[in-house]
Image 1: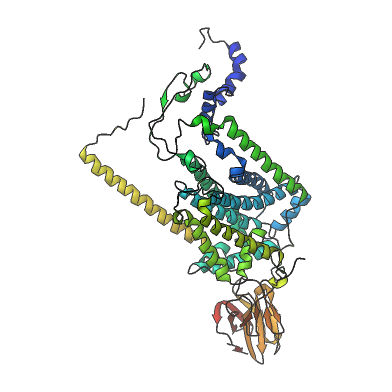
Image 2: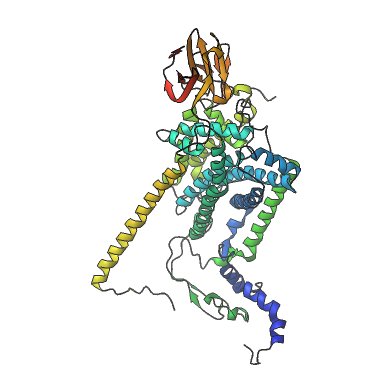
Length: 435
Length: 160
């Protein structure tokens, strides 16, 4: 707003600063108002709250499991898109393309390793995240439905892994798809129709590979992304991560926040009302529950910038480092090319499905449809069955000893089945000792 | 500045029209969703398949000597001939779809250890039902033809 006439020279001189200012609405914040404004006015940062409770930042509380799961999903998307440049969903070519990744594609091996190990990691982290949420009682109102979305996300993660390991079209792929769709065929009434639609044919072949490919690279990631977005959004709307009762005491509206006045020449030009200096502003609209926690701000919350951001970036770094490290030392499994006449003996799925496979070896219907169906139903209903409001936001709260014990039993039984399926089953699924 | 909840004053006749339009839109969109889902279902459910035909010729009866049990793995059937009677037994395990192989006592599945007798009846393991028997017919050209779309009762032979 200078009074001098515009000159080309001045424009050129100011060009870099002007470009930076047009992209980033705020300079790097040096004041509390700046930190608040940064969270508000940046598209990527506004997903986060301006302030975040100290409890949510404590690594021993969340262990960062949800965040790790999300970052693994990001890694999977990135590596998956790259792998798509070389992959052909054809029964005659898919396996050769896997070999090509090893022999003639630059960084092919490491990309495939990263994709496979990140997928295994995501299954594990999503499950552990679910355990964390349960053992800290974080599914209590108002977070019931976010738990339901979380259970759906776990299911989508498993489906994504299942459709994924079929794509190399090796022995594991072929027999996993055979057994997996046969299990679907045991579902009452609709089983046969579902099996036919999944395979696109009477037998496992080209149609099935194409269908699972489309599910794996488009349908499931798309649904997963939408569910993740809703999951995150609801965390914000439910007032951040679950906290112990005392901290979560609801504060009533109206709320007036006074932001201390500081000179901020750049922000004065920004259009967002929040950054105008010397302005009292009110939070508009009513919210219910423990969403707004004005008045106790200083004690138990800190600014997201930089506290939360740094924590997130650190977790991202750890996640990438972990995946890279594993991928450098261990190659993703690739079995023999498909032989439709001879299933490998024993034909074992990846570890996370071996509990299911163990169950199936007793009864296909009960092991593959009945028991898992009941388990998923109970998981979905947990927040509507367990209505007690106590022990929220703390690990293994004494008031929740019954709920926690039941869930721990569920976890241990599944781990037990996986261990049996992984280490104690040999040819013809006979019991063998690994020692 | 604050957003006060200002009620829009609307005149009576508009409400009727607005409600009607709202109702119409709701029904229309819900209907489109239902029709769209149905159309998608019929779209992804294949009408023709590109895989192996379920009805195929397996050769002349002489190629299967009396007393033989010959598994045709690519077709997933086992041709059994006793005297002048011929039958086709499925080699797809009824448990979870693995391929069973003929053994001295009948059939055996390598995946989860199901066992069947020579007629395909379950003798052990998790298999819930017997191996399927398929209709066999003699074509005018004198060849045997198996139709995997038509399951017949265990023990039904074709005399050749």
